[in-house]
Image (cartoon, rainbow, N blue to C red; front, side, top):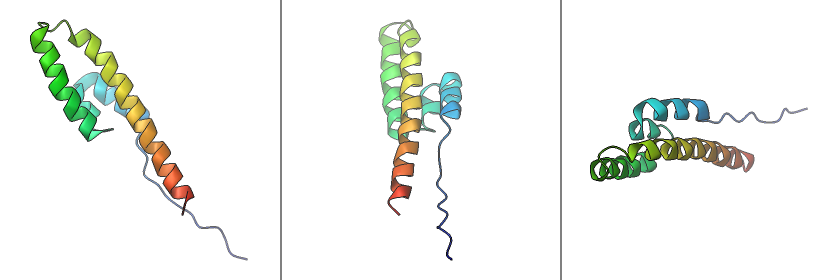
Length: 85
């Protein structure tokens, strides 16, 4: 009787993505999404300059949301890819 294969997948921690983004902003976002982190780095810099820093209070929650969703979506893609094996 053969045993079913064991598939090991790499997942990203949503909590770690949120903590890194909370403390390091777009640099912390790069844990969950590199392209998203680079986009937010440019966008956050522009918003910070043009609003005198006030706009950053609105950008931080947006970054947290994006980082959490990116890590979660990455995990879902990994699980779906493992199921196809």
